[in-house]
Length: 287
Ligand code: NAD
Image (cartoon, rainbow, N blue to C red):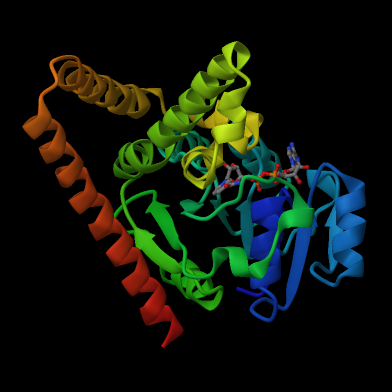
């Protein structure tokens, strides 16, 4: 792979361009905003930026689409029709719908999702370090499709490739990312409403509240796209959460002391094991 075209030079696209420095001979970008393209050219993050698919070079080896989910398949179709790109991938946060759109259009595509992000959007917040140590899901179109070239590139960027099925990705992402997003938003809304009745609520908010609600500060358009593209699994996880919340309501209303203790002990054990895995992975990457 010698020539890379990044489509959407925002937080993720900009980070990928910066982390890919030295891997490709030439990195190009297609982006809506001309200002971002000129900045990235001046910073020598890209060789050249374009604002129309028709103007992009034809001899691109890999096209990586990092725009909002709803635009990924239409942009790939435009580029494919213009004869630009031998292989396509993306960074979209949901996978099954995108895979279906690409397969139907006959586009040579391997789905991608770097499991890294920030609550801020845009090229100005991008950095090569954002992808460091992140799991990077790859969803091939079928079992025979060779993902090695993408795995090598992902490893170069300091991330960890993880090949899986698109539906399995969407279900797991609903559990560990999409449902937590609803809960962070709901907690923020509860605090906002409580504050309307009592201004002291804001004064008492400390680190714990900010930790658990951090992702509620993310870009609303991105999350609107995610929720429109993964309803089946998000609803499955939301129903599971509603059942669990109903159990909590009963335990609290009935003053069930042992049950409350057991529940906190059980969730502490699960959370501690996630934290341990995370710390061990970070340690392995450091040494
Ligand atoms: P962003 O808003 O920072 O960047 C998107 C970029 O795409 C912008 O530069 C915008 O100008 C450009 N763009 C939008 N529509 C375009 C079009 N039609 N043609 C050309 N350029 C266009 O968004 P982001 O956070 O980098 O997210 C990009 C993708 O990555 C999304 O699909 C998102 O689901 C996925 N993703 C985001 C995160 C995260 O935490 N932000 C993490 C992993 C994956």
